[in-house]
Length: 341
Image (cartoon, rainbow, N blue to C red; front, side, top):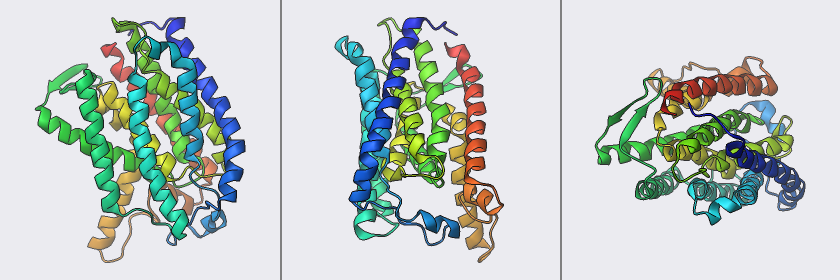
């Protein structure tokens, strides 16, 4: 494992701090604007009854941490870009495309005053196309190989490039929508994603010590997003004053898998994204079991955070436990990739 020098952490720390402050300011400005636009959240009819009180809370708040992260990256990484390092912009651009898809979905929900936006087919087609373009960009720029890195074993396995690209596209779409499912209670998606961004920021900073081209800019994106999410949680923590909407959750999903593929280690998603996976599996199992048994359920409600709510857990407790589980997973993931660096 490489040793972090001050120069490797100075700029990511600056990006995180700048994004945090920017998110605080943007929240003060954008939340009243979203209220004035009547961009209120519609609550699922099948959701917990006590969520009905959240109806009308401004949505599309993901714009806050998206803009904050961009501000932090630009302020801290200006010299990097002048020196020709654009890795962080690749991931930001990819996440922005998904954020735009989410924004369109949110806009339809707000305009039509319903909880369903774009159709499933429309979202799937747009997400799959974005994933294919991003993977092609990474392949062209030399950041993505067809050598599948296996954490802990510190080995790689060569995979046919066509098979790998198809696998990668569906992993990205699945990961993005898993993060979207996790965004079901106040602060949860933001809280769970913060340790993941910290993992990628630290790992990318260490990775930069081995780059012949000098300091890598890749650590700037997750560091800035970490700061942006910390500032956003000031407004999104229970009781939430604003929701991130699909604008934010699809951006976060793309940020998570975008970093994994940019660092050429997609299998690490199984560990750092354990909560996302559990949320998705709980939903799949619930639907499948319901259909097979003609009405019986495994969980009181899915995804699983709603099950815990029905069991009497507060939103703050779910937020804390799920975030701590992710933190432990990210520490384990860090140890799992240590041999690579």
